[in-house]
Length: 78
Image (cartoon, rainbow, N blue to C red; front, side, top):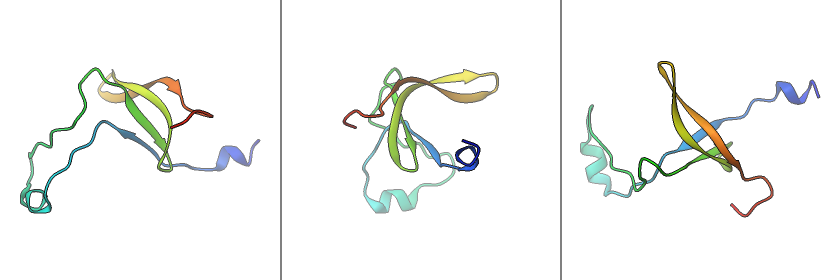
């Protein structure tokens, strides 16, 4: 088990998605806002090395933004 504990994985959280023309993306600057297709109350998807592993909700933890895991997706159709 100790060897497994030394393996690092990349964790990402998907808040939502958006599609836009490349010219619009290239014109964006500091402070630009990209609207996503998700609502504030919708769950986020948690990825491990780019693969969905769980769903969760965004929470505040002191001064930090965090994600609370609400559902594991292991063994389910993702």
